[in-house]
Image (cartoon, rainbow, N blue to C red; front, side):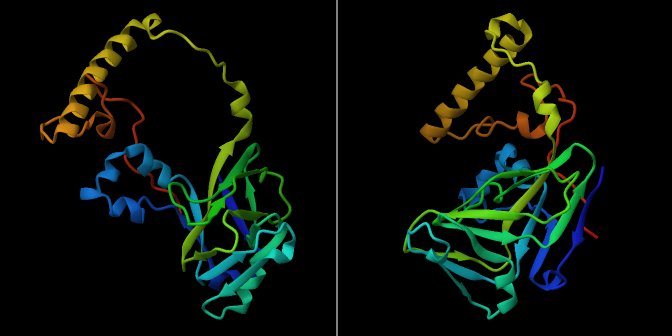
Length: 244
């Protein structure tokens, strides 16, 4: 499958980059013993897709009004060209990053466009979108909502303000959804009971400060079920292509 980003603004090569999403986060690095990285769902989610970064840092202040001129920008590194790519376009305290590419994907595959997974900025929140890039003939924007009036929101240099993830949109309509009692699946019920017993022991030891071999449950990270059997299709990390 293919994703092509057609460049429509040559200045973007210097100011904006697009690259595979990384697994690390500052707050995860700062956790005691980096224990946050034991949560593999977080680590994989961090790496899902590609991120767009802006080389210059800048700050934003929203005065609380809904008009477009209610947002003021300050570009710290004196990059006047950056004003081409981040603007107040919609009002409502929203800033828009104009991505300088026309993305094209295979038929039926669109892009989920959102803020970076498990990463945030004080006073701002990335808004999610889905773009039908298989037939797109235009650029699109990545939008952030400023959430605190009269508060300076700082976008650091090389902050991944946008994360894109391919998704086959039609597949979500094909799921048959149901709810059942776990007793209807005897094998799963037995394994869940074993997991729950071990989980209670782990939490008991965790809160009491007792270190045991089961202090951290490693089955999920190893791609094993509760009985140590291998789970097919398990991922510990992702290896995405670069935009060459």
